Amino acid sequence: MQHAKDIFLSILRNKTTSRQAFREAAMRLTHLLAHEVLQYLPTQNILLATPLAATQGTTIATDIMLMPILRSGITMLPAFLSYFPQTSIAIIGARRDEETAQAHLYYQNIPPHTKNTRVIILDPMIATGGTGLIALSLLKTLGIPESNIIFCSIICAPEGIDKLKKQFPAVMHVTAAIDDHLNARKFIVPGIGDFGDRYFGTEG
Image (cartoon, rainbow, N blue to C red; front, side):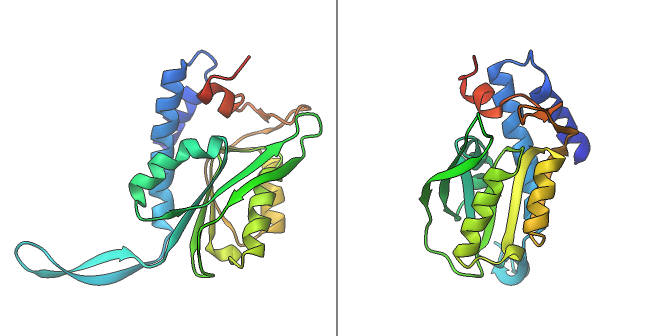
């Protein structure tokens, strides 16, 4: 699967990639990530009837809540909904100050859940880790155990993911790539530029 990830990630990295091709590559890569996340969810056996006979089947054994982080996280939502169509969706908005690189929460809308709900956080890029810490801290206050959280991203800086693992060591991370470092402007290097700007057309 990593081979396939690398192909689509290379399209995202290329600065000459068109907006349409960027969006298509992001969608296909997110499908691969959703497929990987599926492997880590608990399942249970069920009895079902085919058109010919009764047989054993398998189903996901837990409630799932997707949590895209605005704005770029919503780009990952359609692919994940194709795998988890019955899931609830929590929306949070966390914005990074471009001057200080500090993130702050400005919006949240969380559906009903229990402490057994599995939460999948969707955010294409983990740079400093500040936005991720906000999301994880919020889930902690809501009573969601760390071990019930999967943080899914397309690309990470080692500084950011290390920060998240240090403060929330039981959270699982699924990503396509961990890059080399953050530059002085807190951008991931080599990275893909600003994911949201390239996806939504707000660059420049």
